[in-house]
Image 1 (spheres, rainbow, N blue to C red):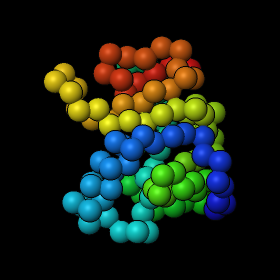
Image 2 (cartoon, rainbow, N blue to C red):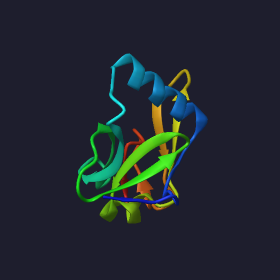
Image 3 (cartoon, one colour):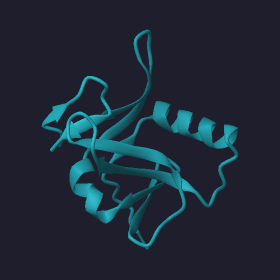
Length: 114
């Protein structure tokens, strides 16, 4: 595992606040970090991974706004420059992904093609 200071993604203050609230509500230990990545599938080709996990061998570890963020090195090409935000509106409530690498996104906002 390596540690880097230049993070490929950003987290808004709203996202950080909600993530810290989730960690506290679910008693997630300090050993865990926020895993961000991609996986094949979804209506546009790739889906985002967002959840708490322990560091693994192929992870890069970043400190973003005080959050320990875990990401596999191979996922950075799909996520470089992405912003994760927390949206709370009439029609939508949850995490949103603003990814400049996405050529197409789906209506649900959790799937994209690159």
